[in-house]
Length: 495
Ligand SMILES: Nc1ncnc2c1ncn2[C@@H]1O[C@H](COP(=O)(O)OP(=O)(O)OP(=O)(O)O)[C@@H](O)[C@H]1O
Ligand SMILES: O=P(O)(O)OC[C@H]1O[C@H](OP(=O)(O)OP(=O)(O)O)[C@H](O)[C@@H]1O
Ligand SMILES: O=C(O)c1cccnc1
Image (tube, rainbow, N blue to C red; front, side):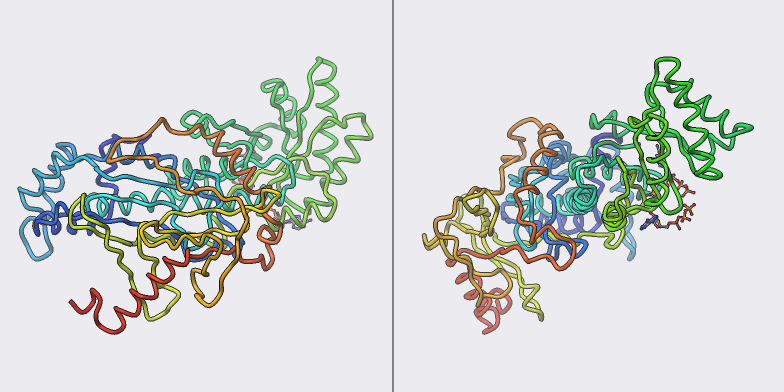
């Protein structure tokens, strides 16, 4: 993540909510240093009213775990933090403990770029409660935003139907870190390039750019501005046509394109950034084709998103590429994913058996899933994913053909005969990464393959079909049992 890439690596431990540190102090003081927990990250609704989400941010978890330490500066800062009631917030003994602290968690996660659906764990963390708690905020910060952006990008790219999409969002992103995260996640979600140069350097994402209206305005005439840009950037010349009047812009760009031809060069593309993009792109295409300039591509921008792109293509607009900024970077329509980190099991020591726990709620919809959860994804004969099953091996009944819906336990799905694969992959074992970070290109191709295998019923924007996610029958029974026990007053709530 940006903080681990750009700032002092050790600052990652302070990139958290204060309560994680006060809870950690409480665990330390209560002597609960050996107690272990299992936490799961999941979200409850697909973003943007869609039928899927794209897992992202997981590729930076191992780095977060490894870099998680409190250096002298961090301890000095914490020593100075005052409690509102007076006196230091943190005790010296706890600060000593933090000074030697190293994360001891094990982590499993859905690989970046893969499909992920509501209520299934996309990250599972096991380890000492203190460690798990200290990781919560930074982990959610990594995966919530990037999963949201990767999903938005996947939708925009889906609408573009094979045409290139570039991330233009840095100027509207949520700060410098936000801009980097947008570039990374939108590339994994399917964008071809970014205008963000730092993201290009850090992540190896191809960079792309045209020129601004100010370039044209800085010259006495548009024609001179176009000429100067063509001379300065002959190998990546994209001319912006709409500073004054697109029709005059077309004429001037044609003049410059011909002059370039005379020098053995080629105008790569033009960009249109306002007005009726369908009408103007058609006029531009006709004019350039009539002059034998069929190779000049048409790029458009201006507050685009998946819906405007879908509409432009439905209008037959001959557009070759899209620059998408504000609505991609700010995840317009839905500014946050709402992913949560919930405890699902505890054990008194690392060798003791896990005890599943459940969080009830007034609304059944918010009831959590207990246990040490794995996810199996089932596929039909054509390789399309058809359902995901959450399994806890300690209670599994061996009947892998029935999945009980995760929200409505009167609904079940039959997956008999379907091929399956494990969704969560282990990244970290007791604080140590199990391998190098995956190449971002691998995550990008995983996303492309996963989306192309997903039934269009789950991919469409309007009223997509809900993808089935449920519990293995033994886990469903355990959840009902724990719910009953808590409701009848014989569970943890009454002890
Ligand atoms: N043919 C079209 N069909 C659907 N939406 C379009 C079409 N052409 C443009 N749009 C979208 O309509 C919105 C507003 O476009 P509009 O023509 O008002 O540009 P503008 O706002 O005047 O440009 P400027 O950036 O100069 O203010 C933008 O989101 C743009 O992407
Ligand atoms: O429209 P977006 O999807 O956010 O894409 C990025 C926008 O940033 C630039 O203009 P800027 O917004 O700075 O000024 P303008 O709207 O006046 O052209 C560019 O010309 C795009 O329009
Ligand atoms: O290169 C461009 O055309 C560009 C980059 C960022 C924002 N708007 C446009």
